[in-house]
Image 1 (cartoon, rainbow, N blue to C red):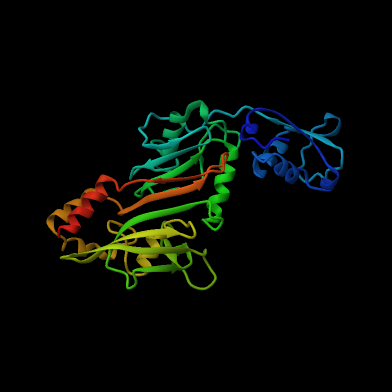
Image 2 (cartoon, rainbow, N blue to C red):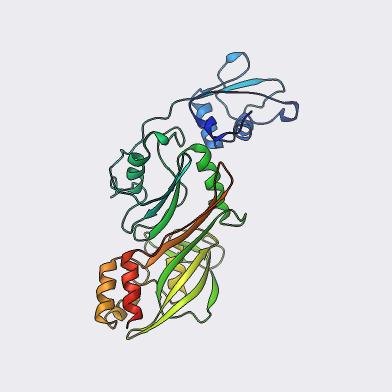
Length: 338
């Protein structure tokens, strides 16, 4: 069988069980042979009666143990219309082809619809922008979100257009660069100057017990392993004390990881009302120009500046950079003139 990305499109896929595959679970075997469909997608197709076996009978149990010589047919239905609806929202498209799209996300744009943000999101914008090139994630014509940026964080984000690309990119992000296929780097303006010009922050993260909307550093074996690498690029002496520009790389990708880790070592991100509230008094000591720039920022000074990954179909490495947006650039210039 072919492992082309196009195989996820609607239609019939037929395969025959080999001697070495005898005794395998049906769902596992199909996922291994049809590499453009995830195992979860295969299981959903089995449950919905879209897989037939010997004699043309429907197989409704993914745990069915296959026998050598048996033939199975998968009916991949047309992708269902997307929910939510597409919206005409301007996008800064850095790269796009039939499999992926890379966006330079502006600050304040929510990535995915959720409570309080049912419209006006990046997903709404992508559904409208990509149109028919979205051939289906899990049987629905929607963009495949493999990683997210906080609402207040700007920068690069890659989205899959089909099941195969979604599966391949998800695997790369799960590895967090350990397989040398993917890397991400951020720029942040933080209060103070770390003791070392380069360092590693390793601290487990979990939901805060006192405030479930926040993430906190936890001790012991609870929480999730999280590692952030930082490098001090520049330090500014201001009337409020030192402020540093950091470059950060993620070894893991936890919710709010960079912001929580930096606050944990005493260097919260400027403008971070959630994790840097204890430094709010410092802002009043900045120059008038810097105070105005920080007020205009109205978010954390964090930007996803670099993104690299292996293209899911061509296997070629792709690398992109996004310059600082105007609001962070204005703040940086104001700090450097203090």
